[in-house]
Image (cartoon, rainbow, N blue to C red; front, side):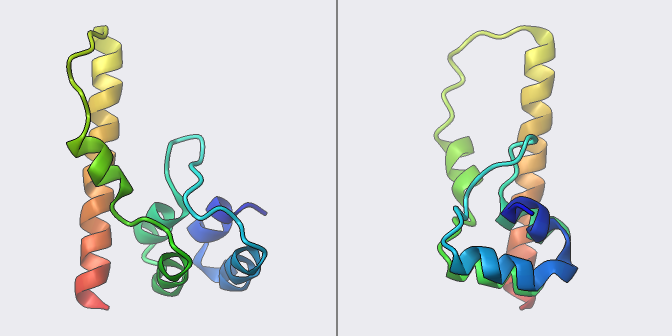
Amino acid sequence: MQLNEASKKGGHLHVVRTLLAAHAQVDVKDMKQKSPLQLAAFGSHREVFLDLESAGADAFANMRLLLNDDDSSSSSSSEEEESSEQEADDYMTIIYIYILYVYI
């Protein structure tokens, strides 16, 4: 089981801890470009989220990417829609992470 999959499923806290103890990469992205920390945040898996953060996962990596994004490149309409959807997902992740921080 990969760290992303274990982070998405909150009942796999022991798997997440085992993978972290084996020095698994904490900021690896899945096929939808989501990190284990984001998946834990989306699933409201507080303990997994905190363990990942303690292991060095970057809670605000996507925010920095969005703020540093260079919009000077041209793209087709479908690419723009896909990019907008990804940005919306990233903003929602940031909101979920913020909520976890505030209510922990």
